[in-house]
Image (cartoon, rainbow, N blue to C red):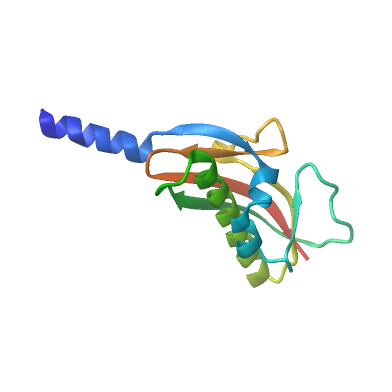
Length: 137
């Protein structure tokens, strides 16, 4: 009985969690973003104008994760968001693209109502962000 209760608590802490919504601007303007993001790959979020004269290469979904460590929920989620953007930029460079258009959060395939925000699933061990965008040349 005791072992099964401990196992249940472990599963809840690993796979449970809550979904929170945070502003994109706070993540983009963080110290982590300045070091992690590639300035050569342009980022265009859903609420911005589509960059002109582009050739669409691929629609892509990317997941970003961050261990919680001693971070606050907001810090951890911002790191996950930047991790997802950084991975998106690396993938875009490999595919020969130079910009990512229409970037938006799509945790559980739901798009947040406010395009200036992203969703993050966070529990005691990690935070996760899923982004969707169009890779273009």
